[in-house]
Amino acid sequence: MASLFERLKSDCADDWQDYTHHQFVENLGKGDLPLTAFQDYLVQDYLFLIQFARAYALSIYKSRSLADMRGGLGGLKAIMDVEMDLHIRMCERWGLAAADLESVPEKSQTIAYTRFVLDAGNSGDLLDLYVALAPCMIGYGEIGARLVDQQVDDNPYAEWINEYASLQYQELVTATIVNLDDLAAVMMTEARYPQLKSLFAAATRLESDFWQMGLDATDDAAASRS
Figure 1: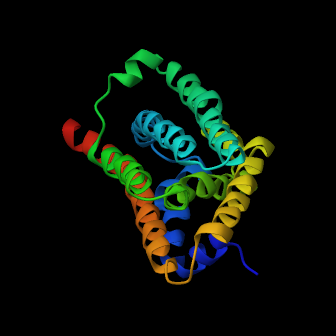
Figure 2: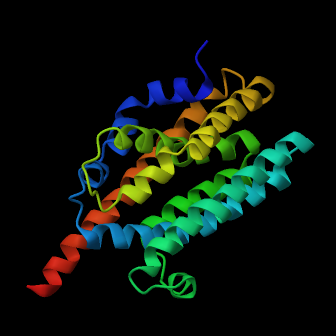
């Protein structure tokens, strides 16, 4: 039987393809993504991760078992101790410290996505929250695993790709998929599935919007110079 994630991914195939094969992603893999696009994305993604850390903290509060609490804590630690450290390391090369990053205003795409996820968790239960989180947590791992095998030599974005292709992150992806199934076994009915699919599809589209935000930043920078 397919996992809940595989079912959601299959039923939202067009949205998933648009997200995981977005022009931003493809250019990143080829190493020819404009630096302005990646810089804008990475700074906003740091702000995004602050809100996602709050979402995982919420998952601990929403948990009904110690095992679920430990799962939420694992996701929280992965964000705060791994992903955010990667962003800080890369941004420091451009002269941006963590304090500088936190002072940057959130763009509308960042606000739309993170508040959508937090609302899903606040208004729903743990399964709603994890379904809304799934496109980010699982999708980045899928993208990293695909790009690492096809990236060009001396790709300036190799560190980002390698982080999400790493064994540590891939294990987190597997744990996320298993956790969705464990929750669904207790909390999901067929009558509820359309609502979960709607959550998943919306979060996936918001991921695409987030990539597009980076590309749009390059266009904005070019327009300001003309």
